Image 1 (tube, helix red, strand yellow):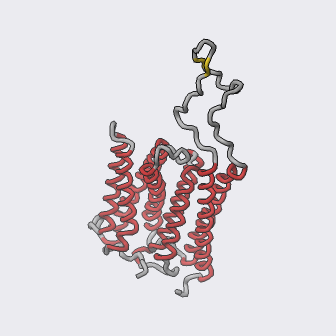
Image 2 (cartoon, one colour):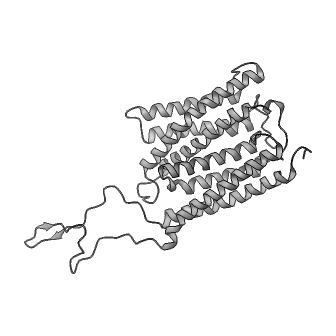
Image 3 (cartoon, one colour):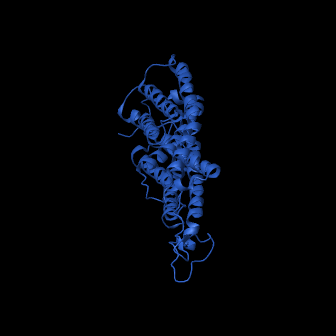
Length: 324
């Protein structure tokens, strides 16, 4: 490990990541218990109360709050959830916030250990991207009440961090001179924030396509569609800014704004794909499943741009330090 690296802080950062993974896993279990054993959301269009037979054979409807008549059975009533399931959701949210804090501390200690912005290689970028995804979830949970996505976002974050630790981890150290620029704080940070929002949308899109009508405890299609759309509406202009900032950085570093490097090509393809989704979402008659498929195609382009290009393709962005 280079002498200029604070080995203690670098080790602390690695340990905090492991603690974060555990906290996200425990949070995921809490969200799953909340979904599985908490009170199910009422369906739209609940069946009407059974009609009561009036004298003379006519049908009369009992008032909604009246008890069942003697000798008649009440309709199916959902059993109230146990006390521990009532607390499962709030505890899961608390664990997510605690995991977010250790996650943030891991990123900060990594940056302090090397004295630079802590996203100079693939390991650091994926860790920061997972932090952005959890941050987006927590923000949208406060703003829009999206706790129903907690189990899926936390498991995605835990898997992403596990993948980074297992396959992408490199020792903390200096980066190539091209990355010693203030543009890292502008271009890469914007890309990370937008990616976190797009991950929220991607999780919602996957659930939208696999959800069955009988899965009453899962988020409704309308909720999933709303979350995906809002996340992309916020993330798309940030991604646009990241692409523009990358072009400006390329002009400063390499003397041209655009060179059709694989990373540049796929960043533009991703931009086109999300623009297509927003256009499709705003076009009458092209919503629901069709628009969600377009969104997931865009999400696939994003993932290949962020990870696949650095692993499988070369180019000027091949300094991501992916372990062999």
